[in-house]
Length: 418
Image (cartoon, rainbow, N blue to C red):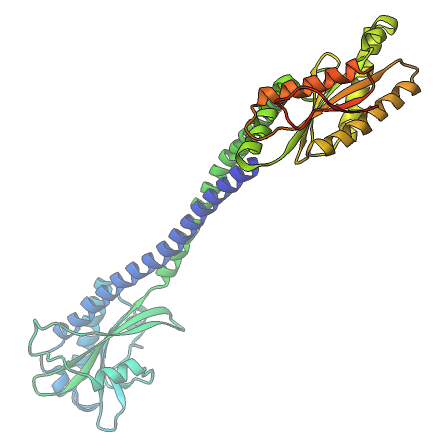
């Protein structure tokens, strides 16, 4: 019982731990997806704001390295840098593709230190870090900037790392009213996302550890209580078995008592009537047993009864029911046997009892009666016949076995052997 309950408890705890672990894993990826979705919305909003900072015809005029003045370029850099800082981006920029198929920056924000020392990226600077997504943006440039309220379909660059850090980027392809195509890009440093996810993971792991530590005392207490209940159960069960054994066992000989023999007789007789399963009875009475009590005392008499009980139990078949009928009388229910088989067993037992008595110098023998049930005869008639066979053995001089006549409704003659 304890093992089964422990298994149930461990399964329940294991299931809870698995559910919590799965929830932690799901929570990690769900949070990561949520954060990146917020970042993508922020990137998109920043990218579509870039054209509004530049002149409306800026990209129509950005056809070569001399078409935009340094003053306008400087103004564009400053405006994009302010927008970049306000939106919290890393870089905002636009790119065109010249007649030779090379990609060039037409405008770009700059870092504060770049603005201070004049090292910002200038107009029409070559853009060597061309990704597949950027090339695809020019090939699929379907956004018409002349329709300012039309939804933009942004192309995203997955998270990547370079010497500046970890970024997530977006490219928004735009076509000017005159048909010129350019791409607006926005980069955002997402190193903090990694840190945030790591911190969330640590918090989750810490919560998992706290949960585990919290349930350990509960599990320990449960197991301890289970062990205590199991000990109590075994104690009660042992008391029950002892009580049950006492209720069906003769306290002196440890054989079955009269109550148990009556139950077994009812069962055997029912099997005989309903399923034709044969059985036979042997009734045993110890001759001159009162003389042993009178001569040696009741303590010796009890010892003799215990020895005879052991002899009967050990010399009978394992299927036989051996019990004390009362006083110095014993009964054996021989399952799956007829009166002939029971008669031979009775003779064997009678001989062994006589041999035991001679070894101990007792004037002790046994008289035995044998009978088997017949069709359409009640159980009381069977008991009457086995008693009559026993009394016939007594009247014939004791120390002998008498088998009842096969016709149980009749009285003697009996078959006898001495």
